[in-house]
Length: 363
Image (cartoon, rainbow, N blue to C red; front, side, top):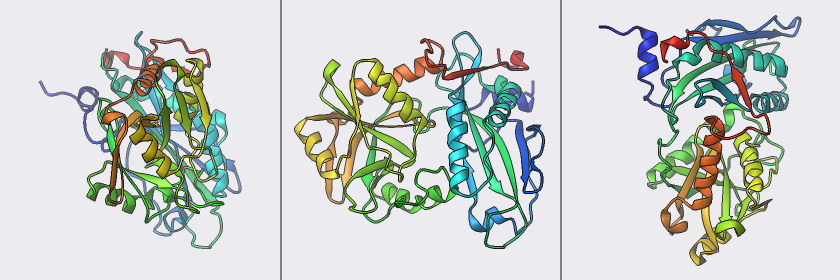
């Protein structure tokens, strides 16, 4: 019996990250004359028509977010910290001189999308989630060198497994000496499209060196570790209850990760010493080789918590924790996953429950 398109999407979600989308999207428009035009509209997912002179295409006024909805063990769906993503979305828009979408409209769009397409997230597989991609771009057909006077907000999504894999396999990384992700006073703390396009060449260099990701250094001294790809980094010193977690401070050139913020809270709750501290490449290598630094992991919405097992800096290579996932890394990964799946309490109110229509499609 031939499956319907909706049923097929519900039972075959394992394709490339961001390659196949669900059935609907949400749209809202803004103009200088009228502001935000009403409420977010739920529409069938489909192509859009824009002028070749669309300002966002030429001048890069494009910001976006990435957040997830998870199916909890009781079968209900909830999005993780959508209010924090709404605030960061506004901050990114502000940095690029774009209109700020009010938080209530952002949350309304999230609820509408998850409520309609959330049923496509299968039950019984905690490795799967519904990834949401809100994006705001300048849609005015004008090439004047100024902020646009018309913008379009869209929200779309797809069912996905882990960004690297469904298992916490350690990744290898290449320290980038030839490229910088951001500069002081630039757009490093904004989630804007240009930050990611500018990273592709460095990512290609990492792949050619046999590494999965690139590690960015500060753009001034080129020695202080900042981020891994589009993810925040954590370093663990010591083992057991006395272990210490360190992450680079938010200098304005780093993205203030929502997952980063959550892990700082979860680690402190578990009794670990947690602090922000600059770590140089030389410290990372020396402390890894001496055993003082026992673990390194990256974190982000798409990748959750991903251990780093090996680093390369030019001809230098070193293992972290013997190249295996560390105990603290796995504890925090499990803690975050337990929270997403409803296996742990949510004292901070990070989960936003959503009523999903058509649950019978996948239950």
